[in-house]
Image (cartoon, rainbow, N blue to C red; front, side):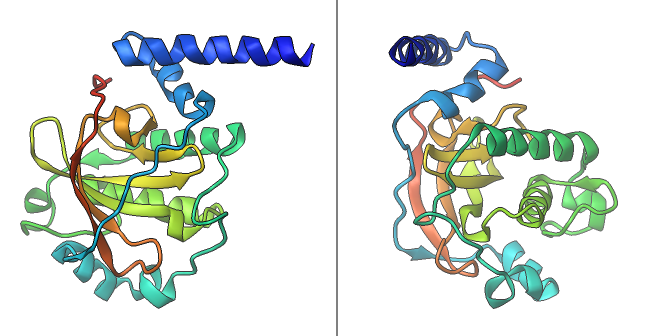
Length: 218
């Protein structure tokens, strides 16, 4: 009975994965690839690199949410053990923040070209969505060293920020431009740099690596 169930789950996983690769699977099915695949697709990180000016200013304004003021929490080797329950929680936080916050550029919002902050007034740009998702998940008990602010280049080649969640099933991406929580290599983004896991105030290069599989927007 157990073997039949395992074969059935593998078959379902293979079907969903094939659909995702072809770009035909629905949002829910594509998200389930993260739960069903057996490999761990974590990004390779490089050398230390420059800290974004917006993040440095954010840390000056919010020292308790950066560096020594931020408790790293506990994870297995720097990776969260992904379960159906905590995957569902990631989806819920991503959906809730994306729904509640209205997009607005920093120039329109603050009269500044670049300002990273919490969108507590209900408006923000991509970095602000990321910071709020990160704060929310830390408040729910997620280890801070697995929730990394990440700079990418989106499908148009523009600079963009997403939240990377480091898990034993691969690096997941929470994005204000996507309804789904995707594995990093499903996004079609170029990954430039992100916070270092061992020290939140340091950043590491991701080599401007192009995610190999492009998935459409929803």
